[in-house]
Length: 359
Image 1 (cartoon, rainbow, N blue to C red):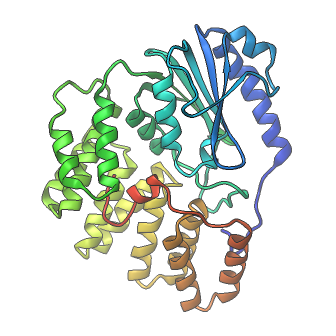
Image 2: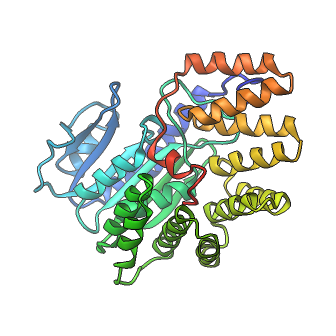
Protein backbone atom coordinates (compact mmCIF):
# COMPACT_ATOMS: atom_id res chain seq x y z
CA UNK A 1 0.00 0.00 0.00
CA UNK A 2 1.12 3.59 -0.49
CA UNK A 3 2.00 4.16 3.14
CA UNK A 4 4.69 1.50 3.21
CA UNK A 5 5.68 0.61 -0.33
CA UNK A 6 7.31 2.26 -3.31
CA UNK A 7 5.74 2.06 -6.76
CA UNK A 8 6.60 -1.17 -8.54
CA UNK A 9 6.82 -0.61 -12.27
CA UNK A 10 9.23 -3.09 -13.88
CA UNK A 11 9.62 -0.86 -16.92
CA UNK A 12 11.80 -3.18 -18.97
CA UNK A 13 9.42 -6.09 -18.39
CA UNK A 14 6.44 -3.90 -19.24
CA UNK A 15 7.97 -2.70 -22.48
CA UNK A 16 8.88 -6.26 -23.42
CA UNK A 17 5.31 -7.37 -22.68
CA UNK A 18 3.94 -4.56 -24.84
CA UNK A 19 6.12 -5.61 -27.74
CA UNK A 20 5.16 -9.27 -27.39
CA UNK A 21 1.49 -8.33 -27.11
CA UNK A 22 1.55 -6.35 -30.34
CA UNK A 23 3.60 -8.87 -32.27
CA UNK A 24 1.83 -12.05 -31.19
CA UNK A 25 -1.75 -10.91 -30.57
CA UNK A 26 -2.57 -7.52 -32.04
CA UNK A 27 -0.88 -7.83 -35.42
CA UNK A 28 -2.46 -11.18 -36.42
CA UNK A 29 -5.89 -9.75 -35.58
CA UNK A 30 -5.14 -6.62 -37.58
CA UNK A 31 -4.15 -8.70 -40.59
CA UNK A 32 -7.54 -10.43 -40.57
CA UNK A 33 -9.45 -7.15 -40.33
CA UNK A 34 -11.78 -6.06 -43.09
CA UNK A 35 -12.18 -2.31 -43.35
CA UNK A 36 -10.45 0.63 -41.76
CA UNK A 37 -8.80 0.81 -38.35
CA UNK A 38 -9.46 3.50 -35.76
CA UNK A 39 -7.05 3.69 -32.81
CA UNK A 40 -7.86 5.79 -29.76
CA UNK A 41 -5.03 7.71 -28.09
CA UNK A 42 -5.12 9.59 -24.82
CA UNK A 43 -3.37 12.94 -25.16
CA UNK A 44 -1.94 15.19 -22.48
CA UNK A 45 -4.85 17.55 -22.07
CA UNK A 46 -7.11 14.62 -21.21
CA UNK A 47 -8.80 14.67 -24.60
CA UNK A 48 -8.99 11.64 -26.83
CA UNK A 49 -7.68 11.75 -30.35
CA UNK A 50 -8.20 9.03 -32.92
CA UNK A 51 -5.86 7.91 -35.68
CA UNK A 52 -7.57 6.47 -38.72
CA UNK A 53 -5.93 4.00 -41.12
CA UNK A 54 -7.85 3.29 -44.29
CA UNK A 55 -6.70 -0.35 -44.50
CA UNK A 56 -4.93 -2.93 -42.39
CA UNK A 57 -1.93 -2.67 -44.70
CA UNK A 58 -1.63 1.03 -43.94
CA UNK A 59 -1.65 0.29 -40.22
CA UNK A 60 0.85 -2.56 -40.46
CA UNK A 61 3.22 -0.57 -42.62
CA UNK A 62 3.52 2.09 -39.94
CA UNK A 63 3.21 0.04 -36.77
CA UNK A 64 4.89 1.70 -33.82
CA UNK A 65 4.91 5.11 -35.50
CA UNK A 66 2.66 8.09 -34.96
CA UNK A 67 0.90 7.99 -38.30
CA UNK A 68 -2.59 7.93 -39.70
CA UNK A 69 -5.19 10.64 -40.09
CA UNK A 70 -5.64 12.43 -36.75
CA UNK A 71 -9.26 13.03 -35.79
CA UNK A 72 -10.90 14.43 -32.67
CA UNK A 73 -14.31 13.62 -31.28
CA UNK A 74 -16.92 15.25 -33.50
CA UNK A 75 -14.54 15.34 -36.47
CA UNK A 76 -14.99 11.72 -37.54
CA UNK A 77 -17.11 11.29 -40.69
CA UNK A 78 -20.10 8.98 -40.40
CA UNK A 79 -19.31 7.20 -43.65
CA UNK A 80 -15.98 5.67 -42.60
CA UNK A 81 -15.89 1.89 -42.90
CA UNK A 82 -14.27 0.98 -39.58
CA UNK A 83 -13.87 -2.74 -39.04
CA UNK A 84 -11.56 -2.57 -36.02
CA UNK A 85 -11.23 -0.19 -33.08
CA UNK A 86 -8.10 -0.26 -30.91
CA UNK A 87 -7.55 1.29 -27.51
CA UNK A 88 -4.24 0.08 -26.12
CA UNK A 89 -3.04 1.06 -22.65
CA UNK A 90 -5.38 4.02 -22.34
CA UNK A 91 -8.46 3.19 -20.21
CA UNK A 92 -6.58 3.82 -16.94
CA UNK A 93 -5.53 7.28 -18.15
CA UNK A 94 -8.94 8.89 -18.61
CA UNK A 95 -11.53 9.76 -16.01
CA UNK A 96 -14.39 7.84 -17.58
CA UNK A 97 -13.39 5.01 -19.96
CA UNK A 98 -17.09 4.37 -20.63
CA UNK A 99 -17.21 7.60 -22.64
CA UNK A 100 -14.55 6.30 -25.03
CA UNK A 101 -16.14 2.83 -25.23
CA UNK A 102 -19.42 4.48 -26.20
CA UNK A 103 -17.74 6.66 -28.81
CA UNK A 104 -15.97 3.67 -30.36
CA UNK A 105 -19.24 1.73 -30.39
CA UNK A 106 -20.86 4.46 -32.47
CA UNK A 107 -17.93 4.55 -34.90
CA UNK A 108 -17.28 0.86 -35.49
CA UNK A 109 -19.33 -0.88 -38.16
CA UNK A 110 -21.96 -3.31 -36.87
CA UNK A 111 -20.22 -6.66 -36.48
CA UNK A 112 -16.85 -4.91 -36.37
CA UNK A 113 -14.29 -5.66 -33.67
CA UNK A 114 -12.76 -3.86 -30.71
CA UNK A 115 -9.53 -4.58 -28.85
CA UNK A 116 -8.89 -2.91 -25.50
CA UNK A 117 -5.69 -3.34 -23.49
CA UNK A 118 -4.90 -1.98 -20.04
CA UNK A 119 -2.43 -2.59 -17.27
CA UNK A 120 -3.53 -5.17 -14.72
CA UNK A 121 -4.44 -3.81 -11.29
CA UNK A 122 -3.84 -5.47 -7.96
CA UNK A 123 -4.62 -4.43 -4.36
CA UNK A 124 -1.90 -2.14 -3.06
CA UNK A 125 -0.69 -1.11 -6.50
CA UNK A 126 0.29 2.54 -6.72
CA UNK A 127 -0.85 4.18 -9.93
CA UNK A 128 1.60 6.16 -12.02
CA UNK A 129 1.30 9.91 -12.33
CA UNK A 130 -1.52 10.67 -14.74
CA UNK A 131 -3.44 7.44 -14.12
CA UNK A 132 -6.94 7.90 -12.78
CA UNK A 133 -8.06 4.37 -11.98
CA UNK A 134 -7.97 0.76 -13.04
CA UNK A 135 -10.86 -1.61 -13.46
CA UNK A 136 -11.39 -5.30 -12.88
CA UNK A 137 -12.17 -7.62 -15.80
CA UNK A 138 -15.80 -7.84 -14.71
CA UNK A 139 -16.13 -4.06 -14.62
CA UNK A 140 -14.48 -3.71 -18.04
CA UNK A 141 -16.71 -6.35 -19.62
CA UNK A 142 -19.81 -4.80 -18.06
CA UNK A 143 -18.79 -1.38 -19.35
CA UNK A 144 -18.25 -2.74 -22.87
CA UNK A 145 -21.65 -4.47 -22.83
CA UNK A 146 -23.38 -1.25 -21.80
CA UNK A 147 -21.51 0.59 -24.57
CA UNK A 148 -22.87 -1.74 -27.26
CA UNK A 149 -20.42 -4.62 -27.63
CA UNK A 150 -21.04 -8.37 -27.41
CA UNK A 151 -19.11 -11.66 -27.61
CA UNK A 152 -16.61 -10.11 -25.22
CA UNK A 153 -13.65 -12.23 -24.21
CA UNK A 154 -10.51 -11.75 -22.14
CA UNK A 155 -7.74 -12.64 -24.59
CA UNK A 156 -4.95 -12.02 -22.09
CA UNK A 157 -5.43 -11.97 -18.32
CA UNK A 158 -2.06 -10.75 -17.07
CA UNK A 159 0.26 -10.61 -15.31
CA UNK A 160 1.14 -7.15 -16.64
CA UNK A 161 -1.59 -6.48 -19.19
CA UNK A 162 -5.14 -7.49 -19.91
CA UNK A 163 -6.55 -7.57 -23.40
CA UNK A 164 -10.27 -7.73 -24.18
CA UNK A 165 -11.94 -8.33 -27.52
CA UNK A 166 -15.53 -7.83 -28.59
CA UNK A 167 -17.87 -7.25 -31.51
CA UNK A 168 -20.18 -4.35 -32.19
CA UNK A 169 -23.66 -5.57 -31.30
CA UNK A 170 -26.48 -5.82 -33.82
CA UNK A 171 -29.00 -5.24 -31.03
CA UNK A 172 -30.07 -1.77 -29.87
CA UNK A 173 -30.85 -2.89 -26.32
CA UNK A 174 -27.56 -1.45 -25.10
CA UNK A 175 -29.00 2.03 -25.70
CA UNK A 176 -31.56 1.36 -22.96
CA UNK A 177 -28.87 0.02 -20.62
CA UNK A 178 -26.76 3.09 -21.33
CA UNK A 179 -29.65 5.47 -20.69
CA UNK A 180 -30.60 3.70 -17.46
CA UNK A 181 -27.01 3.86 -16.23
CA UNK A 182 -26.82 7.61 -16.89
CA UNK A 183 -30.11 8.20 -15.09
CA UNK A 184 -28.95 6.16 -12.09
CA UNK A 185 -25.73 8.14 -11.98
CA UNK A 186 -27.92 11.22 -11.56
CA UNK A 187 -29.92 9.45 -8.85
CA UNK A 188 -33.05 9.36 -11.03
CA UNK A 189 -34.17 5.80 -10.36
CA UNK A 190 -37.77 6.51 -11.36
CA UNK A 191 -36.89 7.32 -14.98
CA UNK A 192 -34.26 4.58 -15.07
CA UNK A 193 -36.88 2.04 -14.00
CA UNK A 194 -39.24 3.21 -16.76
CA UNK A 195 -36.47 2.82 -19.35
CA UNK A 196 -35.69 -0.72 -18.19
CA UNK A 197 -39.35 -1.73 -18.10
CA UNK A 198 -39.68 -0.74 -21.75
CA UNK A 199 -37.04 -3.28 -22.82
CA UNK A 200 -39.06 -5.96 -24.63
CA UNK A 201 -36.55 -7.48 -27.02
CA UNK A 202 -34.66 -10.55 -25.78
CA UNK A 203 -31.28 -10.03 -24.15
CA UNK A 204 -29.01 -12.16 -26.30
CA UNK A 205 -26.07 -12.81 -23.96
CA UNK A 206 -25.46 -13.78 -20.35
CA UNK A 207 -23.45 -10.58 -19.88
CA UNK A 208 -26.34 -8.43 -21.11
CA UNK A 209 -28.84 -10.18 -18.80
CA UNK A 210 -26.43 -9.75 -15.89
CA UNK A 211 -26.02 -6.02 -16.57
CA UNK A 212 -29.79 -5.63 -16.85
CA UNK A 213 -30.30 -7.36 -13.48
CA UNK A 214 -27.68 -5.17 -11.82
CA UNK A 215 -29.33 -2.02 -13.14
CA UNK A 216 -32.72 -3.23 -11.88
CA UNK A 217 -31.11 -3.90 -8.49
CA UNK A 218 -29.70 -0.36 -8.45
CA UNK A 219 -33.18 1.06 -9.13
CA UNK A 220 -34.62 -0.86 -6.18
CA UNK A 221 -31.65 0.11 -4.01
CA UNK A 222 -32.02 3.83 -4.70
CA UNK A 223 -35.77 3.53 -4.16
CA UNK A 224 -35.23 1.91 -0.76
CA UNK A 225 -36.86 -1.38 -1.76
CA UNK A 226 -34.48 -3.77 -0.03
CA UNK A 227 -36.45 -6.98 -0.66
CA UNK A 228 -36.70 -6.33 -4.38
CA UNK A 229 -33.05 -5.28 -4.50
CA UNK A 230 -32.02 -8.56 -2.85
CA UNK A 231 -34.09 -10.49 -5.38
CA UNK A 232 -32.48 -8.72 -8.33
CA UNK A 233 -28.97 -9.20 -6.94
CA UNK A 234 -29.72 -12.87 -6.31
CA UNK A 235 -30.92 -13.19 -9.90
CA UNK A 236 -27.64 -11.70 -11.12
CA UNK A 237 -25.75 -14.27 -9.04
CA UNK A 238 -27.90 -17.09 -10.38
CA UNK A 239 -26.97 -15.98 -13.88
CA UNK A 240 -23.30 -15.59 -13.02
CA UNK A 241 -22.12 -17.26 -9.82
CA UNK A 242 -18.88 -15.26 -9.94
CA UNK A 243 -20.50 -11.82 -10.29
CA UNK A 244 -18.52 -9.83 -7.75
CA UNK A 245 -20.62 -6.68 -8.11
CA UNK A 246 -23.72 -8.66 -7.10
CA UNK A 247 -21.82 -10.11 -4.13
CA UNK A 248 -20.74 -6.60 -3.22
CA UNK A 249 -24.34 -5.38 -3.38
CA UNK A 250 -25.46 -8.22 -1.12
CA UNK A 251 -22.65 -7.34 1.28
CA UNK A 252 -23.83 -3.75 1.43
CA UNK A 253 -27.40 -4.85 2.11
CA UNK A 254 -26.17 -7.09 4.95
CA UNK A 255 -24.13 -4.19 6.32
CA UNK A 256 -27.22 -1.98 6.36
CA UNK A 257 -29.01 -4.69 8.37
CA UNK A 258 -26.14 -4.73 10.85
CA UNK A 259 -25.18 -8.29 9.91
CA UNK A 260 -21.41 -7.85 9.93
CA UNK A 261 -20.69 -11.57 9.56
CA UNK A 262 -22.68 -11.93 6.36
CA UNK A 263 -21.37 -8.61 5.02
CA UNK A 264 -17.77 -9.71 5.50
CA UNK A 265 -18.49 -13.04 3.79
CA UNK A 266 -19.99 -11.33 0.74
CA UNK A 267 -17.23 -8.72 0.42
CA UNK A 268 -14.53 -11.37 0.88
CA UNK A 269 -16.19 -13.61 -1.71
CA UNK A 270 -16.28 -10.70 -4.17
CA UNK A 271 -12.57 -10.08 -3.60
CA UNK A 272 -11.72 -13.73 -4.17
CA UNK A 273 -13.09 -13.39 -7.69
CA UNK A 274 -12.04 -9.78 -8.35
CA UNK A 275 -9.24 -8.86 -5.91
CA UNK A 276 -9.11 -5.25 -7.09
CA UNK A 277 -12.83 -4.46 -6.93
CA UNK A 278 -12.79 -1.10 -5.17
CA UNK A 279 -16.39 -1.29 -3.95
CA UNK A 280 -15.62 -4.61 -2.21
CA UNK A 281 -12.40 -3.28 -0.66
CA UNK A 282 -14.30 -0.25 0.59
CA UNK A 283 -17.10 -2.40 1.99
CA UNK A 284 -14.70 -4.76 3.72
CA UNK A 285 -12.86 -1.83 5.30
CA UNK A 286 -16.15 -0.52 6.71
CA UNK A 287 -16.91 -3.96 8.15
CA UNK A 288 -13.44 -4.26 9.67
CA UNK A 289 -13.79 -0.87 11.33
CA UNK A 290 -17.23 -1.74 12.72
CA UNK A 291 -15.77 -4.98 14.09
CA UNK A 292 -12.92 -3.10 15.78
CA UNK A 293 -10.23 -4.49 13.45
CA UNK A 294 -8.78 -1.06 12.83
CA UNK A 295 -5.39 -1.99 11.38
CA UNK A 296 -7.00 -4.21 8.76
CA UNK A 297 -9.61 -1.52 8.09
CA UNK A 298 -6.86 1.05 7.48
CA UNK A 299 -4.84 -1.18 5.17
CA UNK A 300 -7.91 -2.22 3.17
CA UNK A 301 -9.13 1.37 2.81
CA UNK A 302 -5.69 2.46 1.59
CA UNK A 303 -5.70 -0.38 -0.95
CA UNK A 304 -9.07 0.87 -2.23
CA UNK A 305 -7.84 4.45 -2.36
CA UNK A 306 -4.67 3.46 -4.24
CA UNK A 307 -6.84 2.07 -7.03
CA UNK A 308 -9.08 5.16 -7.12
CA UNK A 309 -6.82 8.16 -6.42
CA UNK A 310 -9.54 10.47 -7.72
CA UNK A 311 -12.03 9.41 -5.04
CA UNK A 312 -11.78 12.01 -2.27
CA UNK A 313 -13.96 10.04 0.14
CA UNK A 314 -11.73 6.95 0.07
CA UNK A 315 -8.63 9.06 0.66
CA UNK A 316 -10.24 10.92 3.56
CA UNK A 317 -11.47 7.70 5.17
CA UNK A 318 -8.04 6.08 4.91
CA UNK A 319 -6.41 9.12 6.52
CA UNK A 320 -9.03 9.30 9.27
CA UNK A 321 -8.66 5.65 10.27
CA UNK A 322 -4.87 5.81 10.13
CA UNK A 323 -4.71 8.87 12.37
CA UNK A 324 -7.16 7.33 14.83
CA UNK A 325 -4.95 4.27 15.36
CA UNK A 326 -1.67 6.13 15.61
CA UNK A 327 -0.29 5.37 12.14
CA UNK A 328 0.24 9.02 11.36
CA UNK A 329 3.66 8.49 9.78
CA UNK A 330 2.16 6.13 7.21
CA UNK A 331 -0.70 8.54 6.64
CA UNK A 332 1.83 11.29 6.00
CA UNK A 333 3.63 9.20 3.37
CA UNK A 334 0.27 8.29 1.86
CA UNK A 335 -0.66 11.96 1.58
CA UNK A 336 2.75 12.92 0.16
CA UNK A 337 2.29 10.37 -2.60
CA UNK A 338 -1.11 11.83 -3.40
CA UNK A 339 0.32 15.33 -3.60
CA UNK A 340 2.66 13.98 -6.29
CA UNK A 341 -0.25 12.20 -7.98
CA UNK A 342 -3.00 14.84 -7.78
CA UNK A 343 -6.53 13.75 -7.06
CA UNK A 344 -9.24 14.40 -9.61
CA UNK A 345 -13.00 14.38 -9.75
CA UNK A 346 -14.66 10.98 -9.22
CA UNK A 347 -15.54 9.21 -12.44
CA UNK A 348 -18.93 7.91 -13.53
CA UNK A 349 -17.82 4.39 -12.52
CA UNK A 350 -16.87 5.63 -9.02
CA UNK A 351 -20.26 7.27 -8.61
CA UNK A 352 -21.93 4.01 -9.60
CA UNK A 353 -19.92 2.27 -6.86
CA UNK A 354 -21.09 4.77 -4.24
CA UNK A 355 -22.82 3.95 -0.98
CA UNK A 356 -26.33 3.88 -2.47
CA UNK A 357 -25.73 1.88 -5.63
CA UNK A 358 -25.22 -1.86 -6.14
CA UNK A 359 -24.33 -1.62 -9.84
